[in-house]
Image (tube, rainbow, N blue to C red; front, top):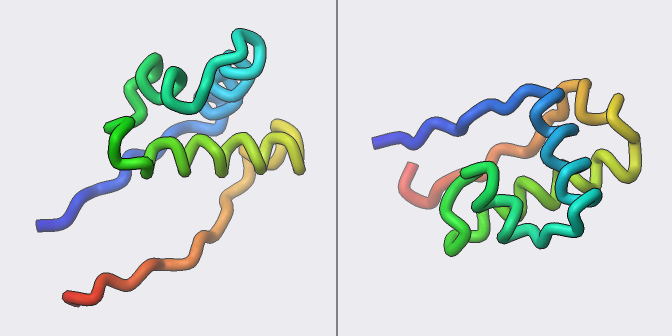
Length: 77
């Protein structure tokens, strides 16, 4: 069984990061507020940290362009 990743629009990502900064929300609080995934797993927090890094390094334009991330191979296939 494969798990599909949800695709978020650049506008949504910018809104989330700006809200997090404006209201000084933690990663966990932001994940819960926007229902980005289970807080316990850490995957949603890592995604949010990646969005924030891109936003801080490249600005809003950075979140508008498509980034290529390396595929992580599963040991089972």
